[in-house]
Image 1 (tube, rainbow, N blue to C red):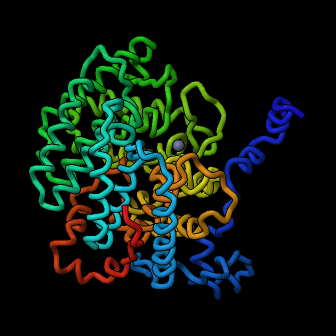
Image 2 (cartoon, protein in one colour):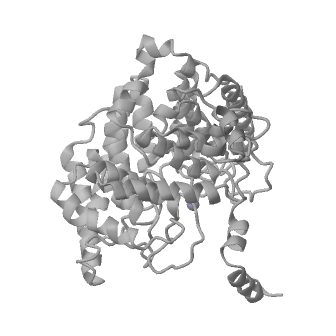
Image 3 (cartoon, rainbow, N blue to C red):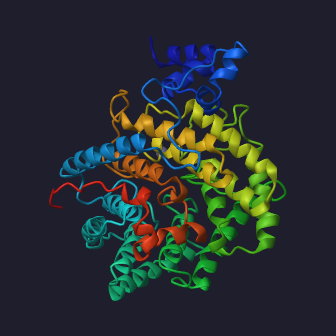
Length: 479
Ligand SMILES: [Zn+2]
């Protein structure tokens, strides 16, 4: 039986077989069932309605009424983080020494330690982050320009780590080098794409990241404006070429395909353009970004999922890079910016698809794995304060506690931030402090969240048990 036969068979069997191939069936009861089993057992019995109980090893909900994670679950996550960190450090001994990217390389590991520092306020993690970032700063190759896959990542993370260590001249040196890349970014004749992984939006993220982490004005407004204008100009040109100026005024492609998702597509680009820190003119947002988003919304599948590109009509991928888990961030941002309920409704439908089909056979990573999908719930929880989404995030975290036990595929870079173990650790650490979580190398902190993040200088936060509980020992492996 060849490929053709199995493909035909799949067509006959329809969505279920396809889904089984890509994701595990979600074994957890959803929030309503779990909550009513806890709070309303008597009522449901009286009504004669048999509801499924929460998983036997976790009776009750994993958080208290105020959204704080319960002690037992916290302990389980902490001990798994410790265990995975040790495995990761061991595994990294044989990792590619030349991969400096945030996506699969050493900058990603530096970002993970920066995150652990943020969550625990333990200086050891900051120093560990410094070790890794120093290594990447010696190895910049000038081949790519973005935060995730290019030199902007190590330079931006370096600037932030040095800033936190009060090494201002080293920090400034990183910023200067980062801004030297600007010329290639805004050059209209270059064939640089606009997407997040390799293109202008990925450089824009680096600029906005600096202004969020170090402070407004770290990168001046005119530099940001220049990059934003280049992205908008490029979108207008393609829209004109494709005769879509009415329906989709800002159109983008990567490798001649009009991708939809967060990594290579329009969801990631529109998401960046809608960031308040990008300071895009209100008129451009309303006249160009909004109709383009609405155009994309019309391409969604009946399931609530989104195609990987405008020309693709198969409802297959539920990844951050392709599909609902990436698009949901764009929809939430659209809801914040345009304040129209339809965006929130669509985001909630994305969340349902991710809940059903998000425990991926591809593994536990951020880009196309369970952790990246789990972040969509955390973000929706921030936006709505609806505990249903915190519950879903906790259940995806519970899945990640069984790291490696599900027979998932092993990614090419098994310890990296975006494909492997570092990403799962990042997600687990964010579940411990859901109120400040953020998708790495993609979401930016808000001012409210930032206030909570400056924990190390604040006595209140030093005394905050939920933070300090999170201490996990760094293995003594020398870097
Ligand atoms: Zn991916």
